[in-house]
Image (cartoon, rainbow, N blue to C red):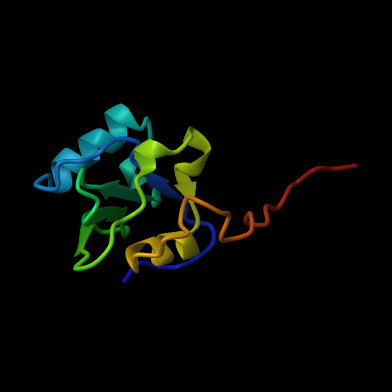
Length: 121
């Protein structure tokens, strides 16, 4: 499905999203409302108002991909009910969210990715 390296950031949109939106409309939200570049290779999550539907927008290097999921039971995490620091996730947290986990957004589910620094001492 989506390349699952730890270097990919997952950004959740902080408002309920109209699930009728497709590639171009979601890309406009990423650019104008989230102040991100959709072509950077990050993953963008959008959740519908009823929290039963979610879409993921992803640039795979050759084109935009939209993945959609509808839960039959339960609800997705509501990004708009949480502080801004919860809007960035790891790929592991996205996977759990798409499976309908109730813990996403409540507790830290994944450690902070290790970052290399090029400091010369």
